[in-house]
Length: 144
Image 1 (cartoon, rainbow, N blue to C red):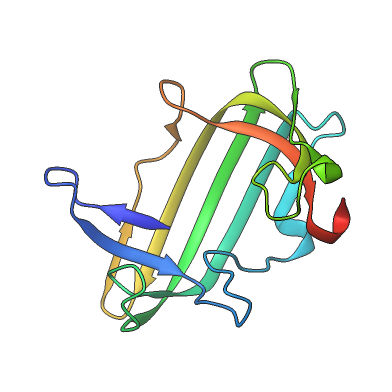
Image 2 (image 1 turned 135 degrees about the vertical axis):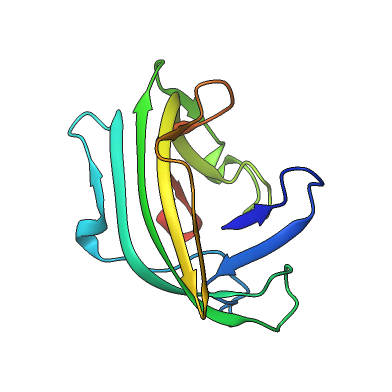
């Protein structure tokens, strides 16, 4: 999660789980019961409590402090799903080497972050109604 100073746009927090040996970053495992998806795949809710991360304050700086994130996020499709990707019809390094179905969506979220001697939280129910969100599923890599 990255946070920016509203008035200047300056990057002030980079909350992440570190960089794995594979190079993957900004990704952490969560408990199986943290994500709930409706049977038709058009709604999802993610609930996280005190997920342990590091605040490096600046992307890839390597200097940081332990922190935790609690989050409630909801997605609801507002349109029909659209097929995306080209799967194995293209080289594995091609950006289109995935298959998925995605629908335009509206999302709402609220979060709080705590670290040594400092905490902050979002406004409750911040919405993407006037920006962008989507919901869907995809397959890539060895799962094609």
